Length: 229
Image (tube, rainbow, N blue to C red):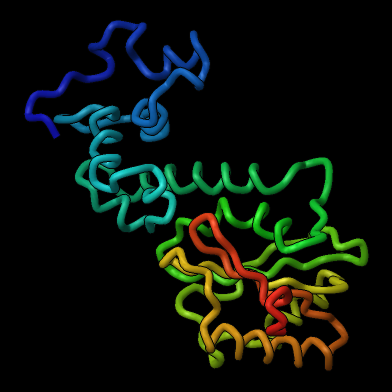
């Protein structure tokens, strides 16, 4: 950060992020200005805008901030846990708005539909997140739940937990989805073994596992399309 910093309150009204948003709308604001509004307050030495610019400089881009953990954001001097939580909450809200609408349940007819729903949330995560999409008889999404975080491991993915939730929400079928932080969605042997285990468990319980979709950076692989189920 610069040694000498101008506080936002000392800027002319037309240059303050909040006032600019009210007068001109959010579209005209820079990423730093939008972040500054989320951060709300600065420190005795640096304004909220300074902190926003520091975050962008540290992570290189907003893309990388999406996948950052709260602790990583909070480690920036002047940000702290509270401001980091505000940023992560805003990112999550944006991801959920992008994926779902209030007046209808999204239908999943193909792997591309899964990707449309889940890529905004998963493509920038720096660890593997496995999600389950629970579907009704019309293939509409009832619920999306996190099954595991971290590298996939047969011993860590418990079919009973997945299908217990499927039964609780009266799901007719399930699709699982996870990301590869490397950006390459090519399935590993572990991915294939986990999928086969879940398929077999689903057959016993009577809730079909329709697909396992792996998301990379702008790319994806459907194990069903690859005939690996």
